[in-house]
Amino acid sequence: MKAFTRRCRVTVVTDSQYLATILNGGKARANRDLVQQVRQLAARHDVTVEHIRGHSGHAQNERCDWLATAAAAQRRQKVAGGAHVPGG
Image 1: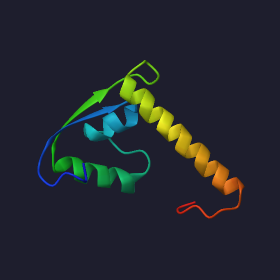
Image 2: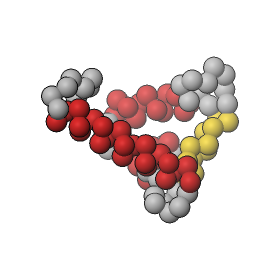
Image 3: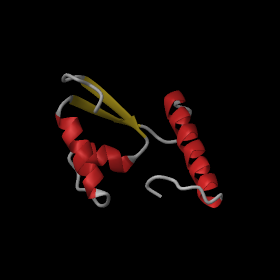
């Protein structure tokens, strides 16, 4: 949403019940600074939230899960190897 230069219609498809709750006005339980940023970005657009079950065969969700898992593994490998990881 940050990359859009004008107000857009955005559909957020997520398997995170927490994110869906946050975007629908629910109370933040953790990561309040990030929640505030996400809400500010969402306020710039017409956002619809679609909650899906994780690992249910949704092609884009499966791809996102694969990318996140690969990134986490790469980060763990860098940390284990002693390399500096920004934010780590």
